[in-house]
Length: 433
Image 1: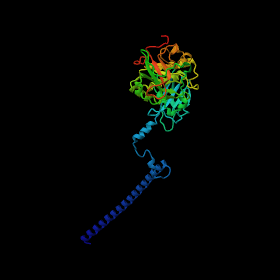
Image 2 (image 1 turned 45 degrees about the vertical axis):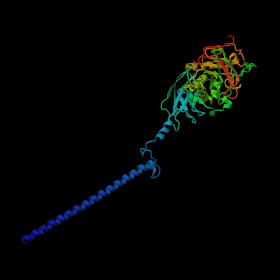
Image 3 (image 1 turned 30 degrees about the horizontal axis):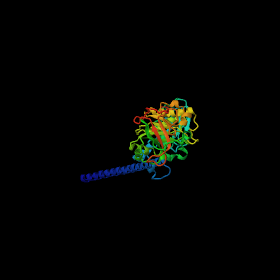
Image 4 (image 1 turned 90 degrees about the vertical axis):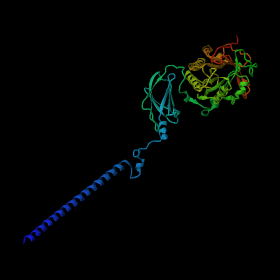
């Protein structure tokens, strides 16, 4: 074999060897790639199965839209209304003690008493108390004075305070206005006036045929006036002023003679606005049915809340008289009735207003310790031309059958010996003077 042929043969063998080597490498690479692809597919299937198991483990069934109900799936911002509703159902307690008692009011975020729920509180050392009538107020009487911790138990649909609140139960009544008394005030739409507004003037023994039923010409340093309530209905105050009336004592409210509710007179605000606009001097009175000093403080507190933004030039009077014989306070003994009047008047005085007591001659003589009331203004009812009452008085109601222009029907007529500009007593009238 010549040298040329020999070189050609060697070249062919080298080429074939390289070709075989390349083919072997290609086969091995393809097999490796298929193995990697298979492993990747297996891994993907395993991950998918794990995710499926995790998702289905948190939901019942295979509902593919279940994630829509997952509160954590979306980062949803609450609307202002939703935030308000959440706040509105956040509860707190207002704790009040007058004398060896505790009143707990359950209020929402807006400060309104929450009704319609049987809330339960725990008073440390005393036990649990439930709002059985669902009026939002829990009253606990007969507690020893001292500090107590009060907790509001959980209630579905509401957020309650996490920590207990401390309150001091008072040993004795203090003649200071109750700040949150407005929560106890009702309108006549919330009660039955026919059984609650039953005040009855007990002056049958203090009336004779000499009763004067028209506006009188007052003595020197005296003033002529009237007292009114819802029973006088709509009043033309300009005509009343023109008729010669100088002052008016307006009923602001009463305690129900049956239920004991604190009720605002439906004509109070209208009468106050009309009388003051006409230029009359104004005072107010409240018909009491309090049976103890605690309730008297409540009544005075109600009055103070109603006159907070009013300008008075006459005192605030407690009207103590009968309620038809069946009133809750009709059977009070002399000592208790006198204590009620004093508690009311002292609470009014401590708030910076003049205070006084209204009663008939008979009640002053027989149902009150009048000598204990001498530091207050005395408004006495006796329907005669000349009164026979032997005690001192600052105002005299001389008839309940008066006639005044601007008022339909009868109206009470009064003479006053009180300084109308100060609203405080400055003189007393006595029949012997």
